[in-house]
Each structure stands twice: as structure tokens, then as C-alpha cells.
Figure 1 (cartoon, rainbow, N blue to C red):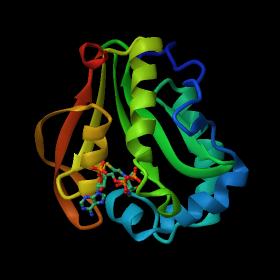
Figure 2 (figure 1 turned 180 degrees about the vertical axis):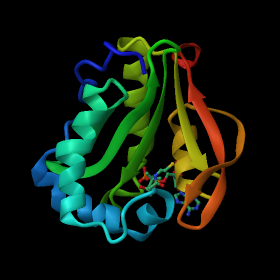
Figure 3 (figure 1 turned 90 degrees about the vertical axis):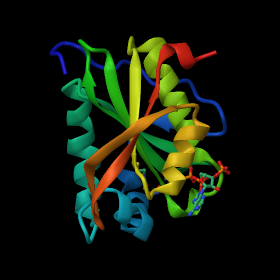
Figure 4 (figure 1 turned 135 degrees about the vertical axis):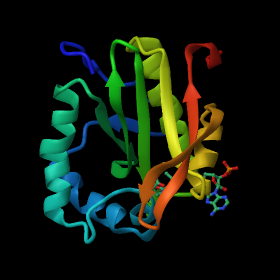
Length: 184
Ligand SMILES: CC(C)(COP(=O)(O)OP(=O)(O)OC[C@H]1O[C@@H](n2cnc3c(N)ncnc32)[C@H](O)[C@@H]1OP(=O)(O)O)[C@@H](O)C(=O)NCCC(=O)NCCS
């Protein structure tokens, strides 16, 4: 991250969802989603995941990620309810690269929401925020996430061996990317 650079604004609404900042009132939905077995299996979250974890994420972690220029965090809202969370992190403004991550709440899965939100956020980063590359890393065993990456139009580059840690232990990560040349 290079000091003095940061994300500005938010992607336009469309595709049946809105990307908007998280709010303290999202805490109950965040607790439910982050307590889910699949979310716990693939993301490094506190267990048990409590209301104070959610509030700390909304009021401290996410704002700090944004203020430092390291990234930006959005809630994925559908029909007035939080359905997921998506972020850009590890932004290197000099190299113009960042990494996208996400979860979709159990009550919102099975509709391709991660792929659509991921495409929207990555396209916004490439078209409007000056980035040249958005990466996505998913454990080899995380079928839904790898499929979401593919559906979002990301290109599979290969494997980063033993690069991640999930609940089950160390894992190889599939490395995906979207670059301006991939956009039509
Ligand atoms: C990964 C995640 C965000 C995807 O949520 P989603 O957008 O609702 O994804 P969907 O359920 O629509 O599934 C996406 C695709 O994967 C497929 N899929 C999902 N689970 C699958 C499984 N167990 N086996 C095979 N295919 C599966 C779906 O059929 C769908 O394929 P399609 O695009 O060909 O129809 C969600 O499962 C999640 O939050 N998981 C826990 C957190 C996580 O893993 N985050 C990502 C870390 S890299």
C-alpha cells in the first residue's frame, strides 16, 4: 500500500444487489453468516463468532482497512437485507494490484451472488479506481468459491502451494485474476 492513495466512491447499483458500507445494524446477520459451518471452514474467523466480533468488524476493522488505503469493504444487500460481504485488500497502489475476498450468507447462497458481486467490484476497481490487476485466491477444495471466480470471468493462473490456512489446516490456493484485457 502506498500512502495517500485509497478507494473513492462505490460501484453503481445493478444486477439485483447493492454494494454499500456495512452498518452496526448488520451485526445480527453478520454473526449468523460468520457462524455458519461453511464460512467457518474457509475463512479465518473467530469461533464462536460473537456480536462484539461483528461490531468490531463494522466499526473498526472495515473503516481502518479503508482509511489506510489497504482496501475497501462492502455489504452485499438484496431486498433490504444483508446477503453477503465483499472486500478488496492488500492493495498495492504502486503495482496497481489488489485481492478480492467474499462470503455469502447461507440464506442467500445458490443464486450466483458471489460471482456477480465479485465481477462488479473487480470491474469497478479496474475501470474506475486505476487498478491493473485484481487477484482472487481460493482453497483448492472450496468448489463454490472457485466456481464463483470462474463465473465472474476471472482467469485461473495456477496454484500457490501450501499458501493458505483454513480450519482444516494448510491448503494450496488456486490463484485467479482479472485484468483490464479481460474486460469486454
Ligand atoms: C463461496 C460462496 C461465497 C459462494 O456463494 P454463492 O455465490 O451463493 O455461490 P453458489 O451457491 O451460487 O455457487 C456457485 C457455483 O458453485 C457451485 N457449487 C456450490 N457448491 C458446490 C459444491 N459443493 N459442489 C459443486 N459445486 C458447487 C454452484 O452450483 C454454482 O455453480 P454454477 O455457477 O455452475 O451454477 C459461499 O459458498 C460462501 O460464502 N462460502 C463460505 C465463505 C467462502 O468460502 N468464501 C470464499 C473464500 S475464498
